[in-house]
Image (tube, rainbow over all chains, first blue to last red; front, top):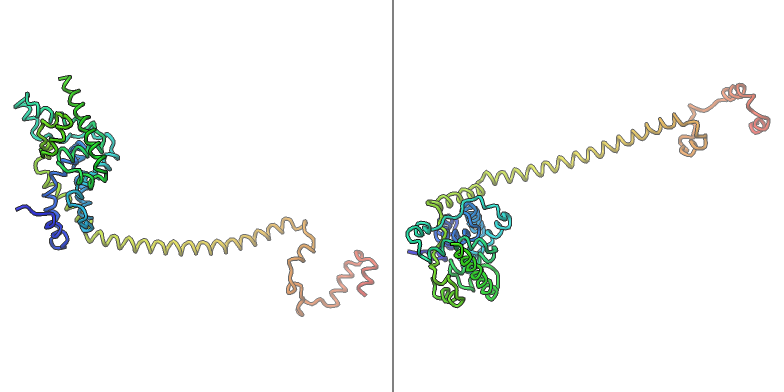
Length: 185
Length: 150
């Protein structure tokens, strides 16, 4: 049975069930946040740092969470801010770090080299790295997390109009990258 | 992919509309378990009583250190001002000893008060002393001075 956000918050708000509630919160959101952060910072080690900082911040502030926004938008906001802070502090030092592991794409590529969809996915990650941090966040939230613009606006503190324009711009940049790479194949 | 998002990409005439948008990043095996343990350890370290007592000790140590500094500063100031006075007096005496010829009696008289100038009975000059002084210094006295005395 899926636990709701309200149930998780209730558990966290009681001292005796706080840790259990927090574990449920991590179980529910760790995978999505890992993916979102990884699409922003690019390497597993950096994602690990940012994700841990995110959850520690969440733990310390969850009792101040007043429910005016949705829990998941609040979590994404903290994760995005943490990733942005990390990127500002560590401008391009992560070339030497192990990149986030692609999800079975390499294997599927070997199985089906002609698959245009899988091929695009393979280079999508590299294309993402060419985007500036804010566009990365916008693209990740819209394309991978399938978030609506209203929720994205809550997460990023940007107007819906500006988000639409920025997403459009990010999609075009990624397409240009894909086309550029395709020419050399 | 959600229809809404796919339609948006189609409207942009984007090739991404033809791609399945599943997760492209995958965490290593057992990563999340390790991560959760690490987070709970960090939180526990921050919450542990040792840290709290260290905080209290820090406060006590800060207050104690402040008090010691205040007392030390006050002692130093007092000591310094006393020393300053002593040094000043000795400096003055030494200076006067060296440059005593540059001063006349009136310069010294300025710094004497009535008490310094009063002559007590024990130190009062008797007539014999005066006569002896006059005998010794008779050549230095002129007639006018002698007339003033008598």
